[in-house]
Image (cartoon, rainbow over all chains, first blue to last red; front, side, top):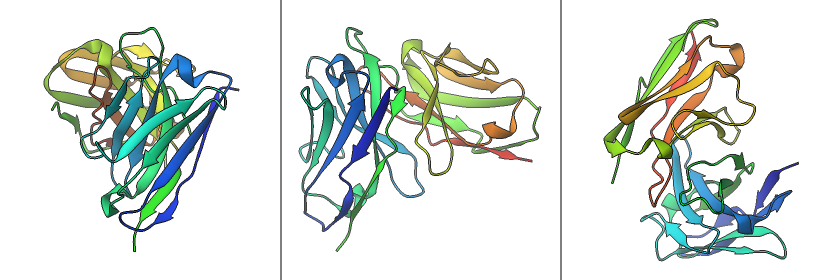
Length: 122
Length: 108
């Protein structure tokens, strides 16, 4: 079964760090665009970071310079390193599979993890 | 930055009725880059439509996406009980990944 399992969320103090993981089954994270999307309590969706099959990256302005997306082909896992966390980063974080590699654009998110909750609070 | 505005905010319908959800972009966007998602409480979003009109895998044909330029529409021909949920449009493509604020489809 094609699926994503995300983990690593928790409670962290402002200014702290957290690393989220997302392990893929039945497909390779290296062969697709891969995305991190967050949803704040009671609010809508925000795409915070994308990595394409060449390793190119995208970051939302709200996280640029603080978050780093990466992947590991051996464990077939996507990561999101989050530093200098702020209260406004509190959200459910989802990883999502994007378009197949080889496409010149990433125009869909067709497989989603169940989400992992990040709470930034003192 | 392109802003996506969805309307109405809430749509109240009875099962069997036709639902029309709108997504308007603040400037023209390529049809290749417009997607629609459904989200139910406590669940991750589910891809319905990509490329403005291509149905995702296993999505029933009562869901239809259309539009171009700045105006896009998601139509549910006959709403089923399981369709009552939140719906988001998304600009998803070259360095732009904006979501609309959502339309809630609720039972009348």
